[in-house]
Length: 356
Length: 270
Ligand SMILES: Nc1ncnc2c1ncn2[C@@H]1O[C@H](COP(=O)(O)OP(=O)(O)OP(=O)(O)O)[C@@H](O)[C@H]1O
Ligand SMILES: [Mg+2]
Image (cartoon, rainbow over all chains, first blue to last red; front, top):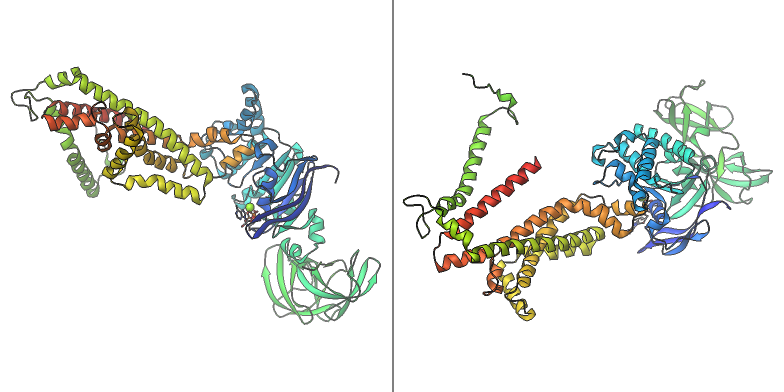
């Protein structure tokens, strides 16, 4: 990437025996909304704090626009940071909190006042400038923390699970606001979350971490539709897995044996002929048909109704239990327990996975 | 009857019940039990006799006069106040620095260091004073103001650090990171973020340190001879040499000053 604002090369961080970061390479493009997503302990915070300068890497480099900043202390990096617990200064008013980074930089009083007002306006908190942080609700504190991290106009904003302490409704509102703010300011956002929906809805690009390694990076659609490993396929949404034996290569596809049935699976670069590869199949790509038609026969074993969708477990002879997700408004057969059905899917629904 | 009617519901804390009355009475009895032995010095200080006792034929201010004209008593009082202020200042600076440092580290070593600093509270004062005596002889600090201030500072440090620790206990450990990510150096972070949060604990600690020093006598008896005299030491010697009612005057003055200070603090709090 030529327009990378941040480059992380071969980053390694070990704590005793564990590798919190295991040879991570990552480029962050100017102005993008990049999300680090992964389960607890996958190294998201470690990677973010390594960028911020709070974690000293065991090996590897962090550079900004080509300049190596690996050993630069955090206060010299000039990245805004928003913490999970807000970390507002309890002895300062909201206004003083937001003005703090400016005061530290020696900005004049009058200009601080204007910039504080401007930043508080940005997060709709201008009316609260004279309150103490302890007099604010969680969502309001989060807004102030955001204003404070933006008041010195950083080029990069680092956010470590900023919304995880808020309730669901408020979280959804703030997601929209954050996204709008990102578009308005053009600042590069690096956002840590373990909430996959949050990641999918907000990001330009998602980096999936597990065990300190990058599993896959890409835009939300690519990650969701073309997961490279079983981990990614199951971490972003849910997936069914099956083993497919590759029988022959076709243009842009492969002819396979999937549990005894001959199927064609779309793939730009399918595994070699004769090998067996794991494939992932999204529950919502499986179409439920009446028994007796062409496809994989099975029997409905369980149904759970989720409002707009219903989730079914269909027991098949050849592929074992398969998870099926189906819009409840869909006409056609009405699934009920023990109903015999036939399952079909499009040829681009299955995705070959790498070994993992 | 024109007395204003006070409805029980408007009494802060709810209606008067038998429980409340019993607790209230009990509370006042305990307060009286604690306060009366202290307050008895007031009539004694006004005695017209030349020995310690209750007034015989009338009240007299003669002992107040002798206190306020005695260079020795006034000197001792001033000395104790100055030593106390010095101790409050030094131990607050050191104790706060120690506690803030431990808070920053937040690791096992810091926890151990905290305990080590607090342990002296558990050591009997006589044992500690013996230690001071041995050391001060070696250091040539016997019968010096420096020696007394140093000893009192060591005695006051645990109290200061405990109260600063208490003030920092609920402070978000991410604050230093936040401050630094916003561009503040480590020192600026300490000065503008952590010290203000520790300030209430430092004030409490300074008051404690002053009190610890002001009424400390055991170590003073061990490490001073003739040159250095503090108020508690003068009182102690006054009791031993003669039974001079001036002591009751000193006690009365101290009680009144304490009441005024406590009142001022209480008013400020509410
Ligand atoms: N200071 C530390 N000392 C020892 N081990 C640490 C330290 N910080 C992190 N680790 C370890 O490094 C690994 C990655 O931790 P990290 O905090 O980056 O995870 P995370 O992805 O942010 O998880 P979470 O979602 O729970 O915040 C974990 O196994 C963790 O136990
Ligand atoms: Mg984390």
